[in-house]
Structures are given as structure tokens and as C-alpha cells.
Image 1 (cartoon, rainbow, N blue to C red):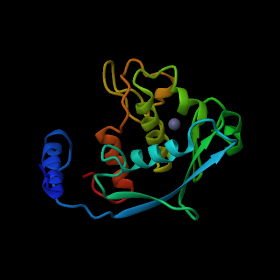
Image 2 (cartoon, rainbow, N blue to C red):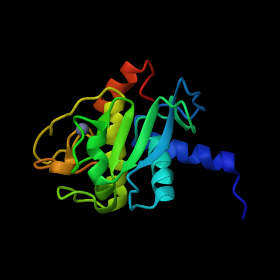
Image 3 (spheres, rainbow, N blue to C red):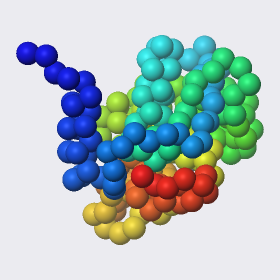
Image 4 (cartoon, helix red, strand yellow):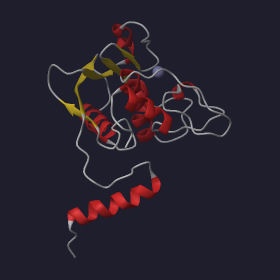
Amino acid sequence: MTVNPTRLVVALCVAALALTSLTSCEAVTPKVTITYEIAFKGSPAANHQQFADHVAKTLADGRGWTMHGRIRYRRVTSGARMIVWLVREDHMVDFGPPCMHLWSCRSGKNVAINDTRWRTAAPGWSLGLDDYQHYVVEHEVGHWMGQSHAKCGGSGQLAPVMMQQSKGVAPCKNLVWPLLWERKQVAARWGVSVG
Ligand SMILES: [Zn+2]
């Protein structure tokens, strides 16, 4: 049996309408393009290709900061607006405050992902490592997009992506992707609709 790819995409989109804030299945033209580079510091132990692939997957995911395609992230080899680093922990301080050896951070145009956290997640994390890798990139890129830290909204609620979930999430529950109100803030700042 052959599947018509266009019909498949439309079918998936229609299914997504029921589950998300998506309001249309028409193709979305990107309004903002953010270029980024992938870089490494201090010979981090994690697989470099897996890091680059996973970051690309996170930045392209409709549940994240893309606003369903209105913001596009494009990898380039030089001159990027944002640099996403994988950094061995003893080199984290090279980026200056607020970067410290234990955690990931954002400093200026740099999003610095801590190699130890990337490989092992964090003590306060209850989901899988793949989810943590999505979360930590969403959180630090969220800072780059202009977001500050957010607090848990109440006992049993899903945590905002801008909560410091690596340091503990109680009484909230871990969540990988931004909440709708977080995406609305970023969308407003970047002049796009939320999707
Ligand atoms: Zn943070």
C-alpha cells in the first residue's frame, strides 16, 4: 500500500487540531528566522553528532518555540545570532556569570549546555534522558528568546519550561515543552501569533 504524503500530513494536522492550540492546517510561512551554530568546548564526552541532531529536532518541534512554524531555526556555520554549545563542565565558567560548572546556562548569544547534565540529566528530573535533553535546550533557548525564570503554578500542575526543573520540580510535575502562556509571551515579543 502506498500512502500519499500530502494526505498523510493533512490527516496528522487535523488530528493535532484536537490536541493543541493549532487553528489551521494551512502551510505556515516562517515570519522570523533565527540562525544558530553548534559548537563544542573542552572536548565534551557526549556524542557530538547526537547533540547536533537532537538540538535540531528540539528547535524544529511544534511543541516548542517555533509557534507552529512561524519562527524557524536554521543552522549555519558562521555568523549566527545564537550559538548552542556543548560544554565540558569545568569549562562552563568560561562563559562568565551566571554560568557555573554544575548547570547549563545562557550568556549573551551563547546557549551553553552542560555535558554532564546532557549525559546524565539532573537529580530533580523524573522523565527520561531524551526528554531532559529536549527540556534543557528549550529552557536555555527560552532565556535567549527573552524569558526569565518562572515558578510552579501550584501543587500537581505541570511545570513551566522556564522553571529551573534541573534543580527540583516539586510540587509541580516535570514538563518538557513550554506552557501555552509561555509561548504566548515569546510570540508577542517576536511579533508572531502563537499558532
Ligand atoms: Zn534558567
